[in-house]
Length: 246
Image 1 (spheres, rainbow, N blue to C red):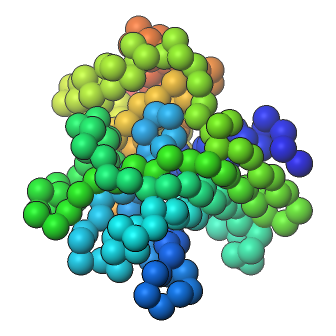
Image 2 (cartoon, one colour):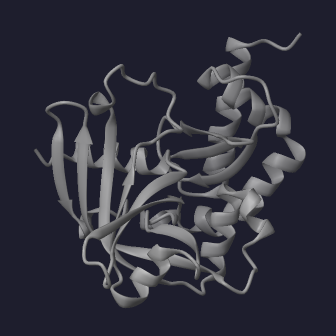
């Protein structure tokens, strides 16, 4: 089954993930090596990693850049199943190479602000995966595979929104922190806390409160800063209808 609905679902799983299992090939011992990493995504859904030169997976990638990332969308507002195998997960495969793009750094550190404490250490570098294949398991019986060429979500006309992402996120966190928290609490049912927006893309916004992440989707895709503003205002109205101000 390779439907467009499954592809969209796989994309949202990835967008809702802040951690992943990274599988690399060990050139010395032979078997694959699995490790736990934090992950962010470019808006074209290319995964971004921050890796230390001391880590085994970093040494493996230096010898063979092929890798896989398994993500389970822990930021979604869904209840965990009793049987872990009934849960949803998506695996992306491709090659992982060092990135010097400042946009990758910005998006990763927005998603993982604590990483700013060590991102500039001499042995740490940012990496980006070029996705060549995608495999979705949506619980029992829902399995789909896609070519990596289908993974980027497109919407080329959304470049103005991508260019303005940093300004929008900064503005919402600095001037509308109450609205950001309301999104999480009223619309997603999360606990009160110091919620911050960490990213915005045509399909929704990423939120974080300490170690907790959340994903809130838009009703329809947005492609410009103005359409994003209207969508964010509409979400505030919706949230206040659910949780009126005292």
